[in-house]
Image (cartoon, rainbow, N blue to C red; front, side):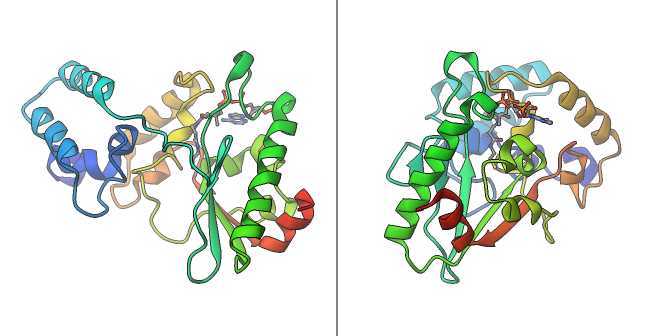
Length: 228
Ligand SMILES: CC(C)(COP(=O)(O)OP(=O)(O)OC[C@H]1O[C@@H](n2cnc3c(N)ncnc32)[C@H](O)[C@@H]1OP(=O)(O)O)[C@@H](O)C(=O)NCCC(=O)NCCS
C-alpha cells in the first residue's frame, strides 16, 4: 500500500494493518496516536528488509499489552457488546476465548456454550439498556454458517457488504486468516497474497478472500430467540 498509494511506510502501517490493535494500542488512524505506537513506527522507519521489519514487529509484540480487551461486565465468553448508541443500535463483537480441548469455538460441539453466552448477554442488554432497538455486527464471520447459526435466522439473512469504506485497523477482515490455535490458514493466506498483486488502493478490503459483511436485525428477535 505504501508503494501503490505513494504514502509513507509508517502511515500505511497505521491505516492498513491491525498491528496497532494487536499491540493493544487502540484502533489505527482514530484520534491521536499513542506514544508507544509512535515509538514502534520510529524504530520501523529505517528498516529496509522484510526480515528486519518482522523481527522488530515480533519483539515489540512481546512487550505489548494483551490485544484482547480485558474481560469486563460487557464480556460474555467469546462475545462482547458496546452500549447502544443514541439511535439504540447495539454493536456486538466476537473473539476467540475458547480453544479448550483443542476444539475451536465455532465447532458444532461448542454451539451450546456459545448460545448460553449469547443468552446471558441479551438478558444483560434487556435489563441494562431497555432502550436498545437494533443489533448490528460487521465481520468476515457472517460468511460462515458456523457463526450465523448462533443467531436469529433473520439476522444472518440480512448480511450484506457495507455501503462505505471497510476499515482495516481491526479484526473484521484480518480475523479470517487465523484458526482457533492462532496459526495462519494457508489457503486464505495464499488467496490474499494472490489478490494483492492487483490491489485497488481505493478499496483495499476487496483483496480479502472473505468480505467483511454487515448484519442487522431488531432486538426483539434476539429476546425471542434466546428466550430472555
Ligand atoms: C473465528 C476463529 C476461531 C475460526 O477459526 P477455526 O479454527 O476455523 O475455528 P472453529 O474450529 O471454531 O470453526 C469451525 C467452524 O467454522 C467453519 N469455518 C471456519 N472458517 C471457515 C471458512 N473460512 N470457510 C468456511 N467455513 C469456515 C468450519 O467449517 C466449522 O464449521 P462446522 O462445525 O459447521 O464444520 C478464528 O478465525 C479466530 O479466532 N479469528 C479471530 C477472531 C475474529 O475474527 N473475530 C471477528 C472480529 S470482527
